[in-house]
Length: 174
Image (cartoon, rainbow, N blue to C red):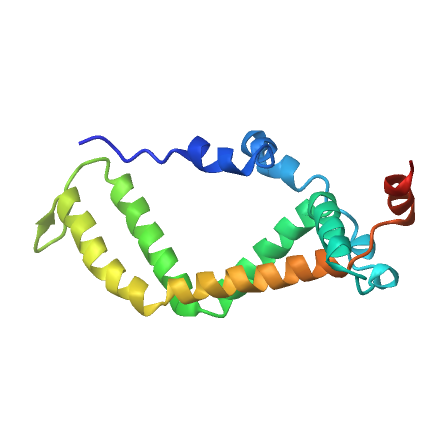
């Protein structure tokens, strides 16, 4: 049986060239252009947009300008959501440790004093314990909260944070 292939190219090609740079970037270079916190949270630049066109303009500019900061906000909200849902954190650690432990056996059987288990039985046992625990930990609720909290935070910041003065005048030049 062949492994399942997810066509990432087909999914991301629909978004244009926006994600092309993300595929070739390492994690270190992704966060290399973090803007200073004083610039990211500059209260003097927060203002109510006059109309929807200005909201679109601000969001387009700020999403690209503060993209690393928004990624850091997502990471912080992800950590917060895991810390406030300890059952989900336990399930993730339990399943990860189980997969790591089974992988360390290198295909050999696990011999306990009273029984002997092959890797197929160990994976099945991990599945039988991990699935109900996973449903009990409510990962879908946590993921939906994370999507909502990130969306409100990022798009709220992007819509209300005004562009720098020099950028505002450069767009109006004829």
